[in-house]
Amino acid sequence: MIWKPNPLALVGIAMVSAPIIAHAKIYITAEQAQKILFPNKILAKYPIITTDDLQEKMRIASSIRHPFQGDRIWKSADGSWLVIDEVVGKHEMITYAVAFKPNGSIAGIEVLEYVESYGYEVAEAQWRKQFVGKTANDPIKLNQDIQNIGGATLSCKHLTDGIKRVAVLYDLALKNASQRITPVQMPKAK
Image (tube, rainbow, N blue to C red; front, side, top):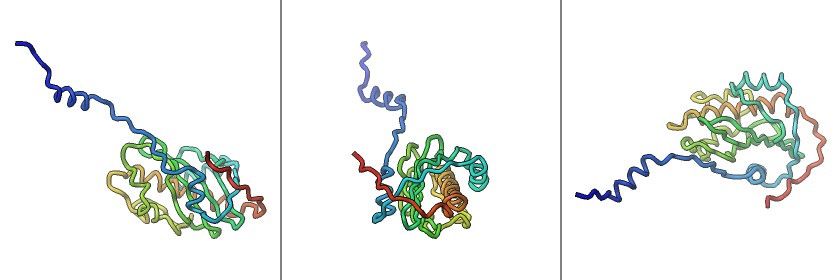
């Protein structure tokens, strides 16, 4: 008897043994986040130097150990701010933007890039809107004033902690920053 492989069995074996690869999902760019969060405002790049003391205060408030990079900050002439940061989801980085009103309350959150295979629900508007109106004085803590998403617990926790970190950054370093800036519009994406 000559053995002839069943083609369906080979497809099944290939599917079981094939590696699952997570691909980066880019939802929006930094420029698009600016237009979504501040549709009628011109933002000027406003990088800051984050001292060791500031990094430590942000870490204590949020438990995020990944250092904050102060080069992705923008300010509008009216005192609104946009800060782009990143945190680890479960294994990979989540890039997100936090918009602040001139009074320091969060105007909105946008997820720019999400690489994980699971937990992408944190990019949904319904979950992100929980942060609107919050300030550094609010807990901004998962299962306290921010609801969890089943199956996305680590992404929810780390993103929530990251947003708390950015709120503390605003409170400690941005709210009293110079009011005199020359707005420079970001170059259009190619």
